[in-house]
Length: 242
Length: 294
Image 1 (cartoon, rainbow over the protein chains, first blue to last red):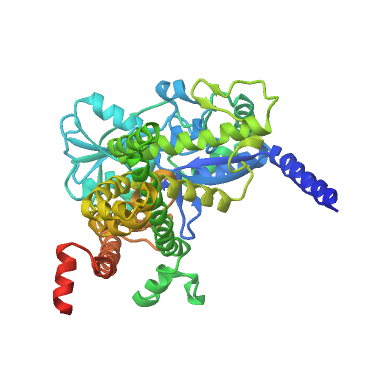
Image 2: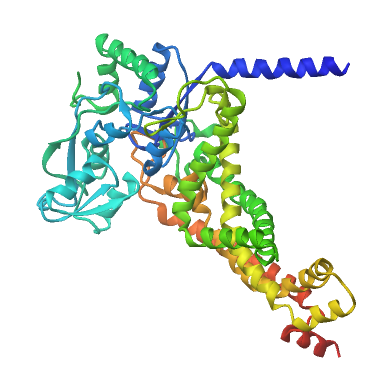
Protein backbone atom coordinates (compact mmCIF):
# COMPACT_ATOMS: atom_id res chain seq x y z
CA UNK A 1 0.00 0.00 0.00
CA UNK A 2 2.75 2.36 1.01
CA UNK A 3 4.62 1.80 -2.25
CA UNK A 4 1.39 2.37 -4.13
CA UNK A 5 0.93 5.78 -2.52
CA UNK A 6 4.57 6.64 -3.11
CA UNK A 7 4.38 5.66 -6.77
CA UNK A 8 1.23 7.72 -7.26
CA UNK A 9 2.86 10.68 -5.58
CA UNK A 10 5.98 10.30 -7.74
CA UNK A 11 3.82 10.02 -10.86
CA UNK A 12 1.85 13.12 -9.92
CA UNK A 13 5.08 15.01 -9.31
CA UNK A 14 6.64 14.07 -12.63
CA UNK A 15 3.36 14.87 -14.41
CA UNK A 16 3.47 18.30 -12.78
CA UNK A 17 7.01 18.76 -14.04
CA UNK A 18 6.11 17.69 -17.56
CA UNK A 19 3.30 20.22 -17.54
CA UNK A 20 5.69 22.88 -16.36
CA UNK A 21 7.67 22.52 -19.58
CA UNK A 22 4.81 23.90 -21.67
CA UNK A 23 5.42 27.57 -21.16
CA UNK A 24 3.03 30.42 -20.56
CA UNK A 25 4.37 33.74 -21.79
CA UNK A 26 3.78 36.45 -19.22
CA UNK A 27 3.28 39.84 -20.82
CA UNK A 28 4.35 42.75 -18.62
CA UNK A 29 2.68 46.13 -19.10
CA UNK A 30 2.02 49.30 -17.14
CA UNK A 31 -1.75 49.58 -17.47
CA UNK A 32 -1.76 53.37 -17.17
CA UNK A 33 -1.04 54.70 -20.66
CA UNK A 34 -4.15 54.85 -22.83
CA UNK A 35 -4.62 54.13 -25.66
CA UNK A 36 -1.54 51.86 -25.59
CA UNK A 37 -2.48 50.02 -22.42
CA UNK A 38 -4.85 50.78 -19.60
CA UNK A 39 -7.21 49.06 -17.19
CA UNK A 40 -10.81 48.98 -18.35
CA UNK A 41 -13.85 49.27 -16.10
CA UNK A 42 -13.61 45.59 -15.24
CA UNK A 43 -10.05 46.06 -14.05
CA UNK A 44 -8.54 44.07 -16.95
CA UNK A 45 -5.68 45.17 -19.18
CA UNK A 46 -7.13 46.73 -22.33
CA UNK A 47 -6.00 48.94 -25.19
CA UNK A 48 -4.02 48.76 -28.43
CA UNK A 49 -1.28 46.60 -26.97
CA UNK A 50 -3.74 44.17 -25.38
CA UNK A 51 -5.41 43.56 -28.73
CA UNK A 52 -2.06 43.43 -30.54
CA UNK A 53 -0.45 41.17 -27.96
CA UNK A 54 -3.33 38.70 -27.98
CA UNK A 55 -3.21 38.56 -31.79
CA UNK A 56 0.58 38.06 -31.81
CA UNK A 57 0.30 35.26 -29.26
CA UNK A 58 -2.38 33.61 -31.38
CA UNK A 59 -0.21 33.79 -34.50
CA UNK A 60 2.91 32.58 -32.66
CA UNK A 61 0.83 29.84 -31.00
CA UNK A 62 1.75 30.89 -27.49
CA UNK A 63 -0.34 31.00 -24.34
CA UNK A 64 -0.11 34.48 -22.92
CA UNK A 65 -1.06 36.06 -19.65
CA UNK A 66 -1.08 39.76 -18.77
CA UNK A 67 0.54 41.29 -15.72
CA UNK A 68 0.80 44.93 -14.67
CA UNK A 69 3.78 46.48 -12.97
CA UNK A 70 5.21 49.82 -12.00
CA UNK A 71 7.03 51.63 -14.84
CA UNK A 72 10.09 52.18 -12.61
CA UNK A 73 10.60 48.47 -12.05
CA UNK A 74 9.54 47.24 -15.48
CA UNK A 75 13.05 46.39 -16.78
CA UNK A 76 14.54 44.90 -13.54
CA UNK A 77 11.53 42.59 -13.22
CA UNK A 78 11.93 41.44 -16.83
CA UNK A 79 15.61 40.53 -16.56
CA UNK A 80 14.94 38.82 -13.24
CA UNK A 81 12.36 36.62 -14.97
CA UNK A 82 9.12 37.72 -13.29
CA UNK A 83 7.57 38.06 -16.75
CA UNK A 84 8.83 37.40 -20.25
CA UNK A 85 8.00 40.46 -22.34
CA UNK A 86 7.54 44.19 -21.93
CA UNK A 87 4.73 45.43 -24.12
CA UNK A 88 4.10 48.86 -22.69
CA UNK A 89 4.57 51.54 -25.34
CA UNK A 90 8.33 51.30 -24.79
CA UNK A 91 10.35 53.10 -27.46
CA UNK A 92 13.39 51.33 -28.86
CA UNK A 93 16.46 53.28 -27.76
CA UNK A 94 20.18 52.49 -27.78
CA UNK A 95 20.35 52.84 -23.99
CA UNK A 96 17.62 50.29 -23.34
CA UNK A 97 19.01 48.02 -26.04
CA UNK A 98 22.15 47.58 -23.93
CA UNK A 99 20.13 45.98 -21.15
CA UNK A 100 17.32 44.19 -22.98
CA UNK A 101 16.49 43.23 -26.57
CA UNK A 102 13.67 44.49 -28.74
CA UNK A 103 11.62 42.89 -31.49
CA UNK A 104 11.14 44.85 -34.69
CA UNK A 105 8.88 47.82 -34.08
CA UNK A 106 5.09 47.37 -34.10
CA UNK A 107 4.54 51.13 -34.09
CA UNK A 108 6.46 53.41 -36.45
CA UNK A 109 8.58 56.13 -34.79
CA UNK A 110 5.84 58.29 -33.30
CA UNK A 111 5.81 61.99 -32.68
CA UNK A 112 6.01 63.37 -29.17
CA UNK A 113 4.28 66.65 -28.42
CA UNK A 114 4.02 69.39 -25.84
CA UNK A 115 0.64 70.31 -24.36
CA UNK A 116 -0.02 73.28 -22.12
CA UNK A 117 -2.78 75.56 -20.86
CA UNK A 118 -2.03 78.14 -23.56
CA UNK A 119 -0.20 77.99 -26.88
CA UNK A 120 2.51 80.58 -26.14
CA UNK A 121 4.49 78.57 -23.56
CA UNK A 122 8.22 78.68 -24.32
CA UNK A 123 9.10 75.00 -24.31
CA UNK A 124 12.84 75.71 -24.45
CA UNK A 125 13.00 77.55 -21.12
CA UNK A 126 9.78 76.72 -19.24
CA UNK A 127 9.00 74.02 -16.69
CA UNK A 128 8.14 70.82 -18.58
CA UNK A 129 6.58 67.72 -17.01
CA UNK A 130 7.44 64.23 -18.29
CA UNK A 131 7.23 60.66 -17.01
CA UNK A 132 10.45 59.52 -15.34
CA UNK A 133 12.84 57.26 -17.32
CA UNK A 134 11.13 57.86 -20.68
CA UNK A 135 12.73 59.16 -23.87
CA UNK A 136 10.62 62.29 -23.42
CA UNK A 137 12.22 62.98 -20.02
CA UNK A 138 15.64 62.54 -21.62
CA UNK A 139 14.73 64.94 -24.40
CA UNK A 140 13.50 67.64 -22.00
CA UNK A 141 16.62 67.32 -19.86
CA UNK A 142 18.78 67.80 -22.94
CA UNK A 143 16.70 70.71 -24.31
CA UNK A 144 17.60 73.10 -21.50
CA UNK A 145 14.08 73.41 -20.10
CA UNK A 146 13.44 72.64 -16.43
CA UNK A 147 12.39 69.00 -16.19
CA UNK A 148 9.72 67.95 -13.72
CA UNK A 149 9.52 64.15 -13.48
CA UNK A 150 6.55 62.09 -12.35
CA UNK A 151 6.11 58.35 -11.85
CA UNK A 152 2.90 58.03 -13.87
CA UNK A 153 1.67 59.73 -17.09
CA UNK A 154 -1.52 60.81 -15.31
CA UNK A 155 0.46 62.94 -12.86
CA UNK A 156 2.33 64.76 -15.65
CA UNK A 157 -0.96 66.00 -17.11
CA UNK A 158 -2.35 66.86 -13.68
CA UNK A 159 0.74 68.99 -12.97
CA UNK A 160 -0.03 71.14 -16.01
CA UNK A 161 -3.67 71.49 -14.98
CA UNK A 162 -2.74 72.71 -11.50
CA UNK A 163 -0.07 75.09 -12.79
CA UNK A 164 2.95 73.28 -11.41
CA UNK A 165 4.37 72.80 -14.91
CA UNK A 166 3.99 75.01 -17.98
CA UNK A 167 3.59 72.09 -20.36
CA UNK A 168 3.68 68.29 -20.50
CA UNK A 169 5.84 66.41 -23.00
CA UNK A 170 4.65 62.93 -23.94
CA UNK A 171 3.80 60.64 -26.85
CA UNK A 172 1.35 62.55 -29.01
CA UNK A 173 -0.93 59.52 -29.18
CA UNK A 174 -1.32 59.65 -25.43
CA UNK A 175 -2.02 63.40 -25.39
CA UNK A 176 -4.48 63.58 -28.32
CA UNK A 177 -7.54 62.17 -26.49
CA UNK A 178 -6.72 64.19 -23.39
CA UNK A 179 -6.41 67.48 -25.28
CA UNK A 180 -9.52 66.77 -27.35
CA UNK A 181 -11.68 65.91 -24.35
CA UNK A 182 -10.41 68.78 -22.20
CA UNK A 183 -12.93 71.20 -23.73
CA UNK A 184 -10.33 73.75 -24.81
CA UNK A 185 -8.53 73.78 -21.45
CA UNK A 186 -5.41 72.13 -22.88
CA UNK A 187 -3.81 72.84 -26.23
CA UNK A 188 -0.80 71.57 -28.14
CA UNK A 189 2.25 73.82 -27.94
CA UNK A 190 4.87 74.24 -30.64
CA UNK A 191 5.99 71.62 -33.13
CA UNK A 192 5.82 67.84 -32.78
CA UNK A 193 9.14 66.17 -32.05
CA UNK A 194 10.00 62.80 -33.62
CA UNK A 195 11.73 60.64 -30.98
CA UNK A 196 13.01 57.07 -30.70
CA UNK A 197 13.07 54.19 -33.15
CA UNK A 198 9.45 53.16 -32.87
CA UNK A 199 7.91 50.91 -30.24
CA UNK A 200 8.83 47.27 -29.89
CA UNK A 201 8.35 44.38 -27.50
CA UNK A 202 11.13 44.20 -24.92
CA UNK A 203 12.64 40.79 -24.14
CA UNK A 204 15.56 39.35 -22.20
CA UNK A 205 18.71 39.31 -24.32
CA UNK A 206 19.03 35.55 -23.81
CA UNK A 207 15.48 34.91 -25.06
CA UNK A 208 16.41 34.80 -28.77
CA UNK A 209 13.91 32.05 -29.59
CA UNK A 210 10.95 33.99 -28.23
CA UNK A 211 12.14 37.13 -29.98
CA UNK A 212 12.24 35.29 -33.32
CA UNK A 213 8.67 34.08 -32.76
CA UNK A 214 7.36 37.57 -32.01
CA UNK A 215 9.39 39.09 -34.85
CA UNK A 216 7.83 36.66 -37.31
CA UNK A 217 4.33 37.28 -35.94
CA UNK A 218 4.74 41.06 -36.20
CA UNK A 219 6.00 40.64 -39.77
CA UNK A 220 2.90 38.65 -40.80
CA UNK A 221 0.70 41.36 -39.28
CA UNK A 222 2.60 44.04 -41.18
CA UNK A 223 2.35 42.04 -44.40
CA UNK A 224 -1.39 41.41 -44.35
CA UNK A 225 -2.21 44.95 -43.17
CA UNK A 226 -3.95 43.92 -39.93
CA UNK A 227 -1.41 45.90 -37.92
CA UNK A 228 -2.26 49.12 -39.78
CA UNK A 229 -5.99 48.51 -39.27
CA UNK A 230 -5.37 48.05 -35.57
CA UNK A 231 -3.27 51.23 -35.32
CA UNK A 232 -5.98 53.26 -37.07
CA UNK A 233 -8.64 51.74 -34.82
CA UNK A 234 -6.89 52.84 -31.62
CA UNK A 235 -5.03 55.99 -32.69
CA UNK A 236 -7.37 57.48 -35.32
CA UNK A 237 -7.06 58.21 -39.01
CA UNK A 238 -4.10 60.57 -38.66
CA UNK A 239 -1.81 58.02 -37.00
CA UNK A 240 1.45 56.99 -38.68
CA UNK A 241 1.17 53.50 -40.18
CA UNK A 242 3.54 51.12 -41.98
CA UNK B 1 -23.47 44.68 -11.55
CA UNK B 2 -26.98 46.17 -11.68
CA UNK B 3 -29.25 45.42 -14.64
CA UNK B 4 -29.78 49.11 -15.45
CA UNK B 5 -26.05 49.66 -15.96
CA UNK B 6 -26.06 48.69 -19.64
CA UNK B 7 -25.70 52.26 -20.94
CA UNK B 8 -24.23 54.49 -18.23
CA UNK B 9 -24.23 57.59 -20.48
CA UNK B 10 -28.05 57.78 -20.26
CA UNK B 11 -28.28 57.48 -16.48
CA UNK B 12 -29.00 60.27 -14.05
CA UNK B 13 -26.60 61.01 -11.20
CA UNK B 14 -27.66 58.55 -8.53
CA UNK B 15 -27.91 55.33 -10.57
CA UNK B 16 -24.78 56.41 -12.49
CA UNK B 17 -22.94 56.62 -9.18
CA UNK B 18 -24.31 53.23 -8.12
CA UNK B 19 -23.08 51.68 -11.36
CA UNK B 20 -19.77 53.53 -11.24
CA UNK B 21 -19.00 52.43 -7.69
CA UNK B 22 -19.64 48.78 -8.50
CA UNK B 23 -17.43 48.39 -11.59
CA UNK B 24 -14.92 45.54 -11.56
CA UNK B 25 -12.18 48.06 -10.92
CA UNK B 26 -13.94 49.37 -7.82
CA UNK B 27 -14.48 45.86 -6.53
CA UNK B 28 -10.69 45.41 -6.83
CA UNK B 29 -10.29 48.62 -4.83
CA UNK B 30 -12.56 47.32 -2.06
CA UNK B 31 -10.77 43.99 -2.06
CA UNK B 32 -7.46 45.84 -1.65
CA UNK B 33 -8.63 47.00 1.81
CA UNK B 34 -8.83 43.32 2.70
CA UNK B 35 -5.34 42.77 1.26
CA UNK B 36 -3.93 45.55 3.41
CA UNK B 37 -5.65 44.29 6.57
CA UNK B 38 -4.51 40.73 5.88
CA UNK B 39 -0.96 41.93 5.31
CA UNK B 40 -1.03 43.73 8.67
CA UNK B 41 -2.53 40.71 10.40
CA UNK B 42 0.28 38.51 9.09
CA UNK B 43 3.14 40.97 9.28
CA UNK B 44 2.61 42.26 12.80
CA UNK B 45 3.06 38.92 14.62
CA UNK B 46 5.77 37.83 12.18
CA UNK B 47 7.71 41.07 12.71
CA UNK B 48 7.33 40.66 16.47
CA UNK B 49 8.75 37.14 16.18
CA UNK B 50 11.69 38.38 14.10
CA UNK B 51 12.17 41.22 16.58
CA UNK B 52 12.12 38.86 19.56
CA UNK B 53 14.58 36.50 17.92
CA UNK B 54 16.83 39.41 16.91
CA UNK B 55 16.80 40.95 20.37
CA UNK B 56 17.38 37.62 22.12
CA UNK B 57 20.26 36.89 19.74
CA UNK B 58 21.80 40.33 20.22
CA UNK B 59 21.72 39.80 24.00
CA UNK B 60 23.22 36.33 23.79
CA UNK B 61 26.46 35.62 25.68
CA UNK B 62 27.57 33.46 22.75
CA UNK B 63 29.57 35.98 20.69
CA UNK B 64 28.78 34.85 17.09
CA UNK B 65 25.04 34.74 17.84
CA UNK B 66 25.17 38.17 19.43
CA UNK B 67 27.08 39.50 16.42
CA UNK B 68 24.49 37.98 14.09
CA UNK B 69 21.62 39.67 15.96
CA UNK B 70 23.38 43.01 16.07
CA UNK B 71 24.31 42.85 12.37
CA UNK B 72 20.71 42.08 11.42
CA UNK B 73 19.46 45.06 13.43
CA UNK B 74 22.12 47.44 12.12
CA UNK B 75 21.92 46.53 8.43
CA UNK B 76 18.16 46.46 8.03
CA UNK B 77 17.68 49.61 10.09
CA UNK B 78 20.34 51.40 8.09
CA UNK B 79 19.19 50.60 4.54
CA UNK B 80 16.41 52.84 3.13
CA UNK B 81 13.07 51.00 2.90
CA UNK B 82 12.61 51.52 -0.82
CA UNK B 83 16.11 50.28 -1.68
CA UNK B 84 15.60 47.29 0.59
CA UNK B 85 12.22 46.47 -0.89
CA UNK B 86 13.45 46.64 -4.49
CA UNK B 87 16.70 44.81 -3.88
CA UNK B 88 15.72 42.25 -1.30
CA UNK B 89 12.58 40.99 -3.00
CA UNK B 90 14.32 40.38 -6.32
CA UNK B 91 17.29 38.81 -4.53
CA UNK B 92 15.04 36.59 -2.40
CA UNK B 93 13.04 35.51 -5.44
CA UNK B 94 16.21 34.71 -7.35
CA UNK B 95 17.66 32.87 -4.36
CA UNK B 96 14.60 30.63 -4.09
CA UNK B 97 14.64 29.93 -7.83
CA UNK B 98 18.39 29.23 -7.75
CA UNK B 99 17.98 26.61 -5.01
CA UNK B 100 15.02 25.00 -6.74
CA UNK B 101 16.98 25.05 -9.99
CA UNK B 102 19.84 23.10 -8.39
CA UNK B 103 17.27 20.60 -7.11
CA UNK B 104 15.06 19.99 -10.17
CA UNK B 105 17.45 20.66 -13.09
CA UNK B 106 20.82 19.17 -12.06
CA UNK B 107 21.88 18.53 -15.69
CA UNK B 108 21.34 22.11 -16.88
CA UNK B 109 24.42 23.17 -18.83
CA UNK B 110 23.87 26.90 -19.43
CA UNK B 111 25.02 29.61 -17.03
CA UNK B 112 22.35 31.04 -14.74
CA UNK B 113 23.60 34.59 -15.15
CA UNK B 114 23.80 35.66 -18.78
CA UNK B 115 24.70 39.33 -18.86
CA UNK B 116 21.85 41.09 -17.08
CA UNK B 117 19.58 38.11 -17.32
CA UNK B 118 18.78 35.62 -14.61
CA UNK B 119 17.87 32.32 -16.26
CA UNK B 120 16.70 29.15 -14.54
CA UNK B 121 15.03 26.19 -16.19
CA UNK B 122 11.26 26.48 -16.66
CA UNK B 123 10.52 23.84 -14.02
CA UNK B 124 12.45 25.85 -11.43
CA UNK B 125 10.38 29.00 -11.78
CA UNK B 126 8.60 30.03 -8.59
CA UNK B 127 5.73 30.08 -9.15
CA UNK B 128 5.75 28.07 -12.37
CA UNK B 129 5.41 30.23 -15.47
CA UNK B 130 2.12 28.58 -16.39
CA UNK B 131 0.63 28.80 -12.90
CA UNK B 132 -2.66 30.65 -12.57
CA UNK B 133 -2.59 34.37 -11.93
CA UNK B 134 -3.86 33.97 -8.37
CA UNK B 135 -0.86 31.76 -7.56
CA UNK B 136 1.48 34.51 -8.72
CA UNK B 137 -0.49 37.06 -6.72
CA UNK B 138 -0.47 34.93 -3.58
CA UNK B 139 3.24 34.28 -3.95
CA UNK B 140 4.11 37.95 -4.30
CA UNK B 141 1.83 38.72 -1.38
CA UNK B 142 3.73 36.36 0.88
CA UNK B 143 7.09 37.61 -0.37
CA UNK B 144 5.82 41.09 0.50
CA UNK B 145 4.65 40.00 3.95
CA UNK B 146 8.01 38.32 4.59
CA UNK B 147 9.93 41.42 3.51
CA UNK B 148 7.78 43.66 5.69
CA UNK B 149 8.34 41.27 8.61
CA UNK B 150 12.13 41.40 8.17
CA UNK B 151 12.23 45.20 7.92
CA UNK B 152 9.88 45.88 10.81
CA UNK B 153 11.39 42.98 12.76
CA UNK B 154 14.72 44.82 12.86
CA UNK B 155 13.09 47.90 14.35
CA UNK B 156 11.11 45.74 16.78
CA UNK B 157 14.34 43.95 17.73
CA UNK B 158 15.92 47.24 18.71
CA UNK B 159 12.87 48.21 20.77
CA UNK B 160 12.77 44.83 22.54
CA UNK B 161 16.54 44.89 23.10
CA UNK B 162 16.15 48.18 24.93
CA UNK B 163 13.09 46.93 26.82
CA UNK B 164 14.93 43.82 28.05
CA UNK B 165 17.64 46.03 29.48
CA UNK B 166 15.07 48.33 31.09
CA UNK B 167 13.75 45.62 33.41
CA UNK B 168 14.93 46.72 36.89
CA UNK B 169 18.16 45.02 37.92
CA UNK B 170 16.68 44.36 41.37
CA UNK B 171 14.12 42.01 39.83
CA UNK B 172 16.84 39.96 38.17
CA UNK B 173 18.98 39.91 41.32
CA UNK B 174 16.04 38.56 43.26
CA UNK B 175 15.61 35.82 40.69
CA UNK B 176 19.28 34.94 40.94
CA UNK B 177 19.04 34.91 44.73
CA UNK B 178 16.26 32.31 44.39
CA UNK B 179 18.74 30.20 42.44
CA UNK B 180 17.20 30.57 38.96
CA UNK B 181 19.47 29.86 36.04
CA UNK B 182 20.19 32.47 33.38
CA UNK B 183 17.59 30.92 31.08
CA UNK B 184 14.93 30.75 33.81
CA UNK B 185 15.53 34.39 34.72
CA UNK B 186 15.15 35.38 31.10
CA UNK B 187 11.88 33.54 30.49
CA UNK B 188 10.24 34.02 33.91
CA UNK B 189 11.35 37.53 34.90
CA UNK B 190 12.75 39.52 31.96
CA UNK B 191 10.26 38.55 29.25
CA UNK B 192 7.03 39.01 31.24
CA UNK B 193 8.22 42.37 32.56
CA UNK B 194 9.78 43.86 29.45
CA UNK B 195 6.53 44.40 27.49
CA UNK B 196 5.54 47.45 29.46
CA UNK B 197 8.79 49.13 28.42
CA UNK B 198 8.51 47.87 24.84
CA UNK B 199 4.92 48.84 24.16
CA UNK B 200 5.37 52.58 23.42
CA UNK B 201 8.06 51.76 20.87
CA UNK B 202 6.12 48.86 19.41
CA UNK B 203 2.95 50.93 19.10
CA UNK B 204 4.94 53.53 17.14
CA UNK B 205 6.11 50.78 14.82
CA UNK B 206 2.57 49.53 14.37
CA UNK B 207 1.40 53.02 13.39
CA UNK B 208 4.22 53.35 10.85
CA UNK B 209 3.48 49.87 9.52
CA UNK B 210 -0.20 50.72 8.96
CA UNK B 211 0.78 53.62 6.76
CA UNK B 212 3.65 52.02 4.86
CA UNK B 213 1.48 49.67 2.80
CA UNK B 214 1.85 51.78 -0.41
CA UNK B 215 5.29 50.16 -0.63
CA UNK B 216 3.31 47.06 -1.61
CA UNK B 217 2.99 48.17 -5.22
CA UNK B 218 6.77 48.16 -5.51
CA UNK B 219 6.42 44.44 -4.89
CA UNK B 220 3.68 44.02 -7.47
CA UNK B 221 0.83 43.83 -4.95
CA UNK B 222 -1.93 46.31 -5.76
CA UNK B 223 -2.82 48.11 -2.54
CA UNK B 224 -5.47 50.73 -1.77
CA UNK B 225 -3.24 53.71 -2.63
CA UNK B 226 -2.49 52.23 -6.07
CA UNK B 227 -6.19 51.75 -6.78
CA UNK B 228 -7.10 55.19 -5.43
CA UNK B 229 -4.60 56.77 -7.80
CA UNK B 230 -5.71 54.61 -10.71
CA UNK B 231 -9.43 55.18 -10.14
CA UNK B 232 -9.14 58.85 -9.27
CA UNK B 233 -7.13 59.81 -12.35
CA UNK B 234 -9.15 61.63 -14.98
CA UNK B 235 -10.81 59.37 -17.55
CA UNK B 236 -11.77 60.29 -21.10
CA UNK B 237 -15.00 58.82 -22.56
CA UNK B 238 -13.01 57.04 -25.25
CA UNK B 239 -11.67 54.38 -22.90
CA UNK B 240 -14.35 53.99 -20.26
CA UNK B 241 -18.11 54.07 -19.85
CA UNK B 242 -17.66 56.30 -16.82
CA UNK B 243 -15.68 59.40 -17.83
CA UNK B 244 -14.81 61.87 -15.08
CA UNK B 245 -12.28 64.54 -14.20
CA UNK B 246 -9.46 64.37 -11.69
CA UNK B 247 -11.15 62.75 -8.70
CA UNK B 248 -7.99 61.73 -6.88
CA UNK B 249 -8.79 64.13 -4.04
CA UNK B 250 -12.03 62.28 -3.22
CA UNK B 251 -10.38 58.89 -3.31
CA UNK B 252 -7.54 60.05 -1.11
CA UNK B 253 -10.11 61.56 1.22
CA UNK B 254 -11.62 58.09 1.60
CA UNK B 255 -8.13 56.73 2.38
CA UNK B 256 -7.61 59.53 4.91
CA UNK B 257 -10.80 58.58 6.72
CA UNK B 258 -9.86 54.89 6.61
CA UNK B 259 -6.38 55.47 8.00
CA UNK B 260 -7.60 57.90 10.68
CA UNK B 261 -10.30 55.49 11.82
CA UNK B 262 -7.85 52.61 11.84
CA UNK B 263 -5.31 54.63 13.82
CA UNK B 264 -7.98 55.59 16.36
CA UNK B 265 -9.05 51.98 16.86
CA UNK B 266 -5.42 50.98 17.25
CA UNK B 267 -4.88 53.67 19.88
CA UNK B 268 -7.86 52.49 21.92
CA UNK B 269 -6.70 48.87 21.79
CA UNK B 270 -3.10 49.77 22.60
CA UNK B 271 -4.24 51.85 25.60
CA UNK B 272 -6.09 48.83 26.96
CA UNK B 273 -3.08 46.58 26.47
CA UNK B 274 -0.90 49.16 28.21
CA UNK B 275 -3.25 49.29 31.21
CA UNK B 276 -3.19 45.50 31.41
CA UNK B 277 0.61 45.30 31.15
CA UNK B 278 1.17 48.05 33.72
CA UNK B 279 -0.73 46.08 36.36
CA UNK B 280 1.55 45.41 39.31
CA UNK B 281 4.68 46.73 37.60
CA UNK B 282 7.34 48.82 39.32
CA UNK B 283 6.68 51.79 37.03
CA UNK B 284 4.97 55.15 37.46
CA UNK B 285 1.92 53.75 35.68
CA UNK B 286 1.85 50.74 37.99
CA UNK B 287 2.11 53.00 41.07
CA UNK B 288 -0.76 55.12 39.81
CA UNK B 289 -2.94 52.02 39.39
CA UNK B 290 -2.11 50.91 42.94
CA UNK B 291 -3.06 54.31 44.35
CA UNK B 292 -6.45 54.17 42.59
CA UNK B 293 -7.13 50.74 44.06
CA UNK B 294 -6.06 51.72 47.54
